[in-house]
Image 1 (tube, rainbow, N blue to C red):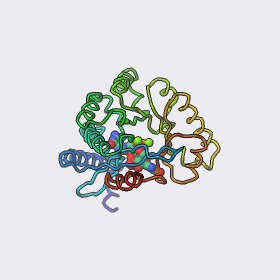
Image 2 (image 1 turned 120 degrees about the horizontal axis):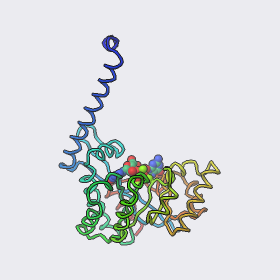
Image 3 (image 1 turned 180 degrees about the horizontal axis):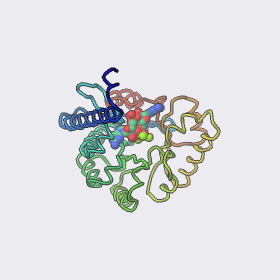
Image 4 (image 1 turned 60 degrees about the horizontal axis):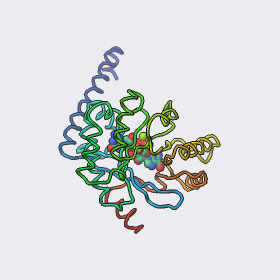
Length: 275
Ligand code: C2E
Ligand code: MG
Ligand code: MG
Ligand code: MG
């Protein structure tokens, strides 16, 4: 305290900035090493068909087992990976691992992965997806790519071109966190999505608020009209699930149905138990 009292605001600010830059640089260095030493792992969260309660697939979610800091969640390192371009090798690893894992599941099941906006700007995402499918031998229709609205903001013509090529390969495209951006509706008209994932913020107050109920019911209707599969994410209790069933939402994902879990645990508790 006594020490900082002697410094002016600018100095304190500069030091804090410097610290933040250092931290970021450290994380970037660590991230590079982590890719080399394979410190990442995937967790799989089950997705269910609501009307008959069958397991239809799983979302692959990345985690980092940091040698010093322990387990890190994606929100703490994906942004740095995006800024530094490391997202491309990272995402290649995710793709490869997710496809190979899905090969061990029944053929009726898909795996979904999340793509970052920056992957649409740099690198050849279409050939990367193609390569992952060829290397693993997974049928393209068993891979779903989750894309958020921020991807679509940049160069719409370019993104549309990429998405059309991905559709030709035969993978499924879904719009993640639907309803949180500015132009969700116009994007649905412009881009060839197969599915919509309703953002969990709508599901959270679904049961309490009539407005959220109306919004969800409308999104489900919209999905039906456009022949898109509608998935609710963030389902945390049975009331929400019952309501989703009532409004005929197609699929659901959330802690109530299953948390993200290791590949092994997913196989043992979700797949083996149901066969
Ligand atoms: P997302 O794709 O929207 O994934 C859903 C997030 O909600 C996950 O957080 C999941 O663990 C969490 N979740 C699932 N069910 C519930 C629930 O019932 N309640 C609540 N409150 N949360 C639930 P997670 O794993 O921390 O991932 C955060 C975000 O990081 C993801 O959001 C996705 O955008 C990004 N991400 C994860 N893995 C990857 C990856 O491999 N590549 C890229 N580019 N992004 C990834
Ligand atoms: Mg997602
Ligand atoms: Mg989401
Ligand atoms: Mg998200």
